[in-house]
Image (cartoon, rainbow, N blue to C red):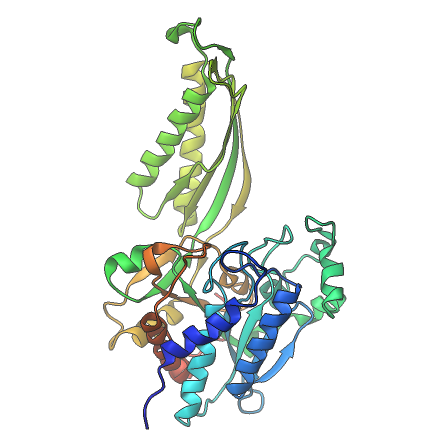
Length: 415
């Protein structure tokens, strides 16, 4: 009997799901919309073909479950169904499709598992429609803030109203909290969203940790002045200070392993061609899989900003506006994924995830791990996002091995 072309099957399912989108370039599929409903219908079909029992929970998470022996804990796998506006066909949703195909592969081989398994499609990871995210995994972990139900989208619709209009009962979300003793772990498959795997010439990578993030809001205040009448040595140029700080952040990140630093927003006043900028408002974002490295960088760059302001005679207002700790992946799952990718677990590529994923919230419930696929040119959140059938086939094979051997290294509680 000829082995199915699992990568081609993945591409076919993803193409079908990509059509569950608002009109326009790429894929736009926001939570609790007709496009979301259409995607759930496709995924329900797929889950049923894999032999799973399908349900939709109060947070809008579609769950396909294969029961194990009575009382056996469950291994959870999956990702999110939603996209950014005009995004790609793989981000999130591929992490639902590939484990389902891995289960189909095991089913064809007659494999019976000594534990239960669930594949989950979370409603909202991107946080595009509402100013909140990760609702599905937070509901399972018992960390969802019910006050978020009153947040509104740009049309003034509350999250609660959108969910109720979708046929859900958001008031029941607290009851979704899982017993950690009944959850073996969470494994999420995702495209890398960067160029590292492609540059290394490998299709799969094992995530070691999801980077912690901190953001700083910075205002440098100088003196606006005529660009043609004030000598250079007498200027208090806020933009020059901002540029110096930006380069200091870049230099520190280049010199420090596992550190990323980004100035992603900059606004100037008065913002005209012939005026020295009197005010620069900027953001500084710092990411690292090590909280120690991230926090040390935040401290160092705060001190550097003070020195720049003093040297340039600028006012400085700088505060940390956001902080999210890193999420380390469970070493046992990292080892198991490594062994699934290579014969002896040696030589598998390990890398941190700079982006946040559902796994970061699932870590409050159980041990977590992530498998990355390469993606063409590192492009994601864009219509040109692409993962090859070959890479997806490799991922399906690795996931099938993980599922088949997971009970040999059981994990029943979060670290």
